[in-house]
Image (cartoon, rainbow, N blue to C red; front, side, top):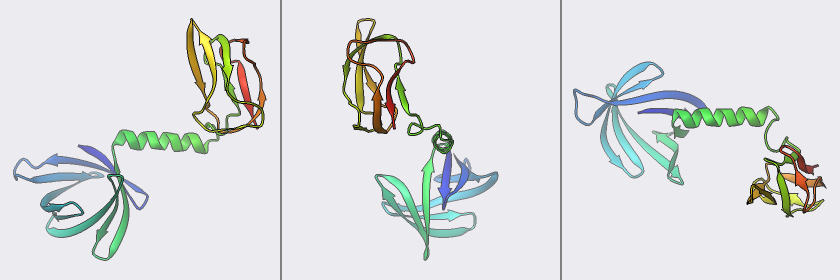
Length: 175
């Protein structure tokens, strides 16, 4: 099993495989280093493990079922465990947000396909949250809800009910 452990903001790539020589034991590869690990005792909020030639008692806290903190002795560490895919996706999202290309940087909602505007649910000056339904577009005899890809205040409505629109035509502009 491959995981990414984020400890105090540092990312560690971990692979856990069963130890074929010892029942109930594992080999953990941490950034290229292989370490034998054996679970001695597991409780809902703690674990006693043999790591290499040392035994440690670790207490942990969870938030919404996810590991968030590990305590060893009198030292506390913020922790997050995720799959490599989750880690990569979160990195891409963070890059997307920091590049200024995120949903809040975008100032216009456009038509996803050609069609006819059946309803406009927002008006100028109204605050819209990300994901709110802002309009209904009829295309190929189907009604499609248009949800906001922008969070902000409506500056201008570029179309009105009954208008025919082209793909990528601006519908709503934000401040």
